[in-house]
Amino acid sequence: MTGQAPAPPHPPRTRRHPARRRARFWVYGLLVAFVAGSVFPFYWSFLIAGHETSADPVPPLLPGGHFLANAARVFDTVPFWRALGNSVVVAGTVTVSTVVFSTMAGFAFALLRFPGRDRLFSCVVATLAVPTQLGVIPLYLTMAELGWAGDLRAVIVPNLVTALGVFWMRQYTLSAVPRDLVEAARLDGCSTGRVLWHVCVPSVLPAAAFLAMFTFMTSWNDFLWPLVALDPDNPTVPLALERLQAGHYVDYPLVLAGTTLASIPVLVVFTLLGRRIVAGVMAAQG
Image (tube, rainbow, N blue to C red):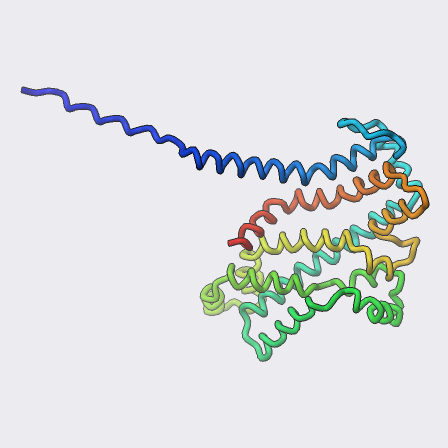
């Protein structure tokens, strides 16, 4: 007697555990709240900047129609174009030089062997404990002796490389570049420069992008040293924004219009480096 084989039973449907669903709800809820909290200051600045005067009542949820007029007043009140140009030159130069020199120094401290390597690296890290304010006066005297006081070189040259950048790139290079890979490259006849360019640099690009974004934001927002080193008619963006609120009466639509304009280059840089930055943060957490 022949018959059909019984059909295999259907696999039981898996139900999501209630605790897991609640955890996902809280995770996404916290992410949404974090994003909203991060975006709200930018939106509120644009909202206030769209009104005619700061004497207006509490603004509605939609921007007014005076943002372009307030932005024009910013350029008429302070040399904002010059400030933007100076900040782009300073932040761009400092960012490129910091990434290049920190990558080279991180490679040397992590993968090269030379006398005094560990002691020299300890001295570099120890400089992180020195407050910036302690070096303002001797640094200004040095810039004055060189004839750079009031010039952009006084802001650029002292910040061409940072101890934090060297430490960051050294630690990332240790975890991202295996020493066996470096030895294999040397056996193939690679020089130290080729090992750096062809082996180390492709592996540390996420960390370099994160360092570039961090350095650009730090240099763009720097206020104390440019205030001391630069002339009043040769400001950076933070100095120009400070001059917008230097009177007895603070015109908040004017100030926040300048703040919104000053945020645009930072947002552009973040957009360009976003994927690399996220990769660098995830790698640092791992």
